Image (cartoon, rainbow, N blue to C red; front, top):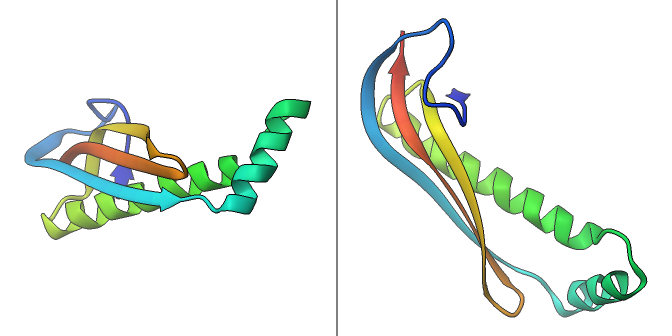
Length: 104
């Protein structure tokens, strides 16, 4: 499955647009991770715990989106957008959206 943020695929023709597909993931962070991230923020540096959680959320949302595109018979997704939102303390939502297509 070809997944791209662009609206076209260079050298390929989009034969059919099958519709918008999305993948949504809500993740919680535990208290220990929040505490360690807070310490990292105070003393400076990167928060590996949260970076890992962001990566996990992105991968899961993209997988869910591509699974839905396959169900429609797509072999590609164009115009992919990723959105990260904080829902409340310790909860994060990742949404991947795009247009499922058949590429020739």
